[in-house]
Length: 281
Image: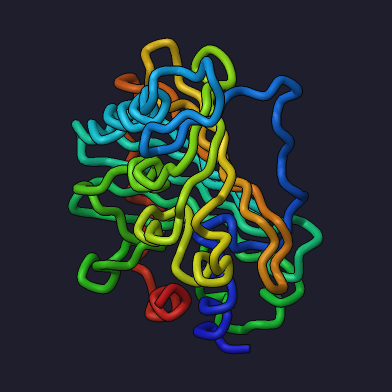
């Protein structure tokens, strides 16, 4: 296996899109007490429902604070996790990404730091597959590798767009809500049409295509904090083709209280070799 094939088989499929990693457990279950459902167009399915459109509008509004670019977040899917922070005031962001586990043939960990105009990544690859690739020795340097911005421009795996500061794209996802109901204080459930949500970051075009018509009615749950800001969004992707049902969970916290990312110390930085760019392109 070449480094390029390794990248295509692992990174492109899973990085920042945790739903595409190895299969996960089944979907979640709804609460024991049903709540009236309100369609996105504002039609209630049962008498006594909340004022039409209120629940969806609350979720649309809940994502506005994200655009200010000062928060911590997590993304979790089958076999991969991402946690990080975005700090727009300093034009910085940091992410720790893990794909695969101790028993995987190939596991990857990345520590990515962006401090405009620079970016760095520290990479760890482990497992039998990684051990069999001579080129990996040139990547596991144990140091932060400084990235040439011209070579990662437009690369969602290594780059970061400070004009679109939400790695999960929750604002895009909530725009696709087709049905929603309140399930308690600050809690919601319903369905989302993800058929046009490839730009969100938590899904990609291949996942959406595999879902087929199911992409239009993906179940979700959401929570907002006491200030009405999104704190959790969970998508329950149904089984599609060879892929089992999967859950994608994203959380947000520390709105307005995140701190600037820390640049790696100069003595821990080297220039990224060509093999690194091959891995991710």
